[in-house]
Image 1 (cartoon, rainbow, N blue to C red):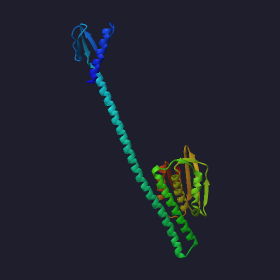
Image 2 (cartoon, rainbow, N blue to C red):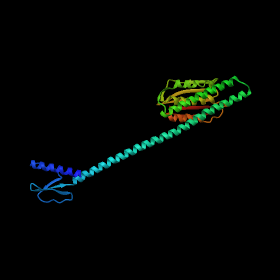
Image 3 (tube, rainbow, N blue to C red):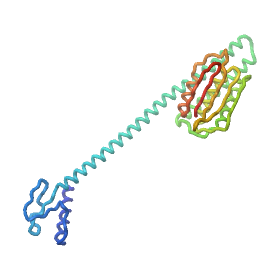
Image 4 (cartoon, rainbow, N blue to C red):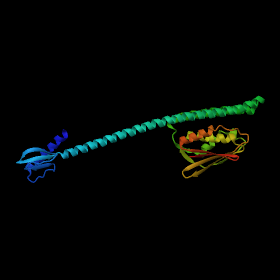
Length: 289
């Protein structure tokens, strides 16, 4: 056994020093005696050393061996725990990605259902008007609806492309983005009062996702409002609150709620909260970024 051989070699060196120096004191595990010594861990090492007996206390070896085994056990336990933790992290990451993919597929189904439903609803109204006689206004609405569904299809493709990276966070200037999104609803907002109380506010978020959320909120406001749409910002601590308020047209069709559900899902994706409040004669949508 290497440990025992090293122990014996070390004892030989100490005995050599004892021969060379009269006042040299060996370690406690080397015991020199003129008479035999008894003990469980004592072994005779040299039967004749300058007329005396040399015994070695092997309890030192046992203690070193015990410490070695304990250290080995602790290191192996640490290695097993480390590997278990790495396995857990890899499994957790895999399950999270799978859940994220499932949620994304649900999100895409909501997007497509919402966009297609809106398009079909608009065409149904236009067809009813065309049945009564060719109307330039109806043709204009058909052309506008075609442009709308084409634009939304492009936005959906952008959302799908951005999914693997979850969208890079960047500084988004909200007031400019709000005005840009509002511009895409000029037709629906025609004849309605649009009030904008904005200041230059920047947030860090994926621009495409924030733009999609705003588009969904203003789409609801433009479609179901009667006479006005009001937009404002306010700060609450580190958060920015965007509020979109509108009155409700008496003849407004009841929505499916897919747009708001989609906005909430997108909000969760970027760490934003979307809340909706339906009050007497008005509708409020809040986004907390």
